[in-house]
Image (cartoon, rainbow, N blue to C red; front, side, top):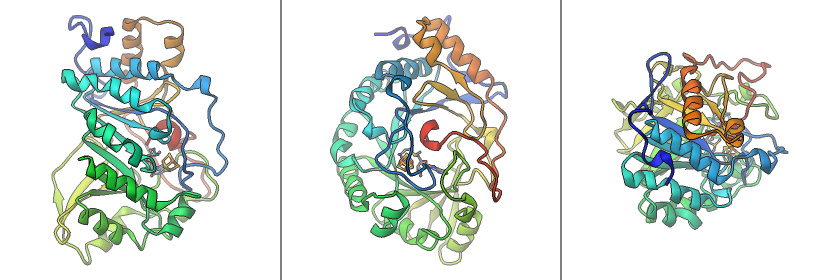
Length: 343
Ligand code: SAM
Ligand code: SF4
């Protein structure tokens, strides 16, 4: 048992509140920068991954995540890179699930590309994971192979099957890419809804250098929504998650559809989330370069109160918002890749 399992109410605030009065209750934790796919909008084809020594150990990840839970984070999403390629990931998740048992954590979840779900789905369900997000941009094998630079869509679909068979709720996330899947989005959404999955569309964000120009593929979700509304009935659902997604119910399919639109709209005023990279850097805004290094103090032997103070100081500097924009020929708004920060 660490001190974080039984926070001292006298010394530990029960909530994380930033300088603009926003309550931080949601941590996205990247456990690796590595991945078994190379999605064109996310990574360069020949990525140089971090040396192992720079990446937090499973114990360090547990210690920092547990400190956040003790400070009031009630939702923890594990991401990457691809979280399920991290060696020992199930051991970490199992350890973190103790916070579900105590009730400190309401939800432990993950975002995955789905390639290894056939192996892990039943273990995830066993330790108390209830819902997962699976990224899937197309059902077409050739296009999937091109977009992921070599992936096999059948593996992902088998992974979703396994997750649903294990009792997990699956949300299918797709990045909208003008010429690639722009014409297929309605089919993808209908496919997800027919299987009882929610679906969410995401606009490409200018994170990290990739080969090619993102402006070529940027597709505004306002445009997608208007197109879908020409043949479907979309009813707004007042489901506000504190995130940048807004949801509708599609009357014809009965399913829920989310739109994540950091570019055409931002919802920074209600943002409740922060991110920790796999190297222990706390980013309190996906679209800004603000950063607090927690790894150096951790490795220098900081005690628990010191770690809490470092986290509180990072949260205190959470910026008011981002100003993403996609401009032809511009360098990315933020130099780090999504795979480093954690999507
Ligand atoms: N590998 C896992 C996966 O693909 O679900 C988790 C990490 S991935 C970085 C998380 C999410 O970020 C994925 O849904 C992916 O499509 C999305 N993503 C990556 N790069 C992006 C970008 N530049 N703009 C928008 N979404 C991006
Ligand atoms: Fe890997 Fe996910 Fe990035 Fe695709 S989006 S390259 S699956 S980390």
